[in-house]
Image 1: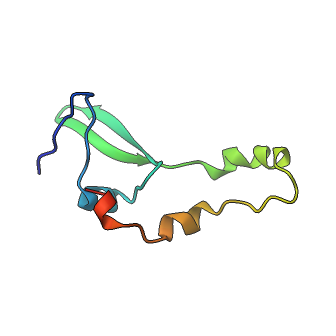
Image 2 (image 1 turned 180 degrees about the vertical axis):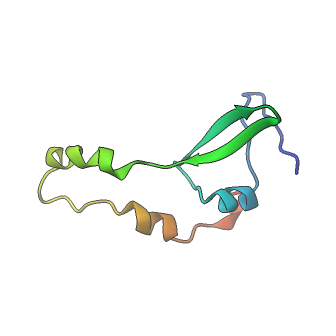
Length: 80
């Protein structure tokens, strides 16, 4: 599998790779250097670290459900 590097040094991964990693828009991928090259690993949001911020939100605000957002279907044309 080959990916292209843009003039801004950005890379777009095929949807199949991102699906295999279980990542989507807004997620981060960690690159780990090893003796044989680089390893890609999803970097998950630690939801426990967000808990202290709950007191900063207005009480009438509906909380954002990140898990349901991840499971929503998105237009596949936007991925490649």
